[in-house]
Amino acid sequence: MKHTTNSLSVLPNKTWRGRLRGAALLAVLMALVVPLVQTVSASPGDTFPPVFNIPDGWQPEGIAVGRGSSFYVGSLLNGAVYGGDLRTGEGDIVVPPQVGRIAVGLAVDKRSNAVFVAGGGPALGPIPGSAYVYDAKTGAELAEYPLGGLFVNDVVVTRNAAYFTDSLRPVLYRVPLGPRGQLPDASAVQEIPLGGEFDFDPAAFPNANGIVATPNGKSLIVVNTAFASLYKVDPLTGEATKIDLGGASVPNGDGLVLNGKILYVVQNFLNQIGVVRLDESLTSGVVSDEPLTSADFIIPTTAAKFGSTIYAVNARFGEFTPGVPSPDLEFQVVGVPIP
Image 1 (cartoon, one colour):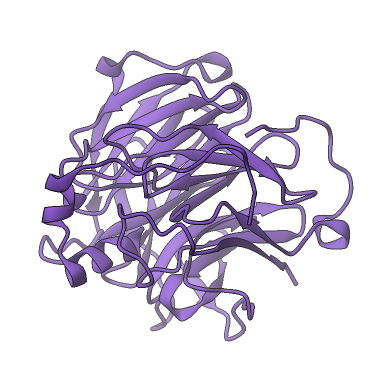
Image 2 (tube, rainbow, N blue to C red):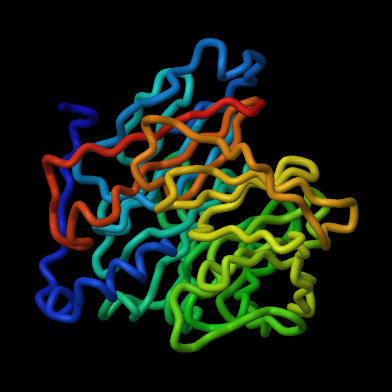
């Protein structure tokens, strides 16, 4: 099936492939454009396609919504970024394949129209533990931040900074942002230890995974996949408070979406999106016994909200070897309405 005139390519890296180790790689990946700027007034659940394809063989993990009804999906195959319009489900490759890179979690700063990309790391072979920023319209690289991460997994953008998680280190990487999202030099990047009640097991993977922020940017929420736990985190100090779920947990927790005091937790291998109703302090919550589900889910990893719909990307882990082309494998974005 044809989605774009651009063809996908994979980086010939025998060293990387030689280091991929079946079950270990699958465990790693468990953690794991032309934008339209017009104002959107319609509810996406009314007229927007609930399921649409992205390019065959794309090997997606992260999804983000940008200006208007634009969306972006990164590629684990080669670090490319695909962008399109939620109104139609149509799109094209915005950021072409990048030598020696992958794209895991994504976030868009709508002020600067920049796409922030979590770039994985040496847990998958000779891949830098870096972060990348691209122009959402042209695909031009705006910045590269060598974080020294082991597996830079996800990212959230606030008014003052972009925060990246590392699934193999108990830290957050903070990239401070200037007025209107102005990007800093690489020397300004900060490493913030995750402390307090944050759980970390160096022998487990993934630890820190999905991340979201409150609208004012004063609090972050991070999911730890290895411990099936959620944490409220101070963005300046890294002090973490474990969110009391009353004995419940969020197994297979991956990407997060925060809508007011409701937290949506993508639970990849469970093929569902958990719903957690948080209290005002964000330190306790109740896990709903009615998660969001879809017959079209095939191991969704991350999600983004647009209007009254949550859009999740199907990663289809276990059906391909990451980094090795799978040109005949179809991948979809699936929208589920918020009750």
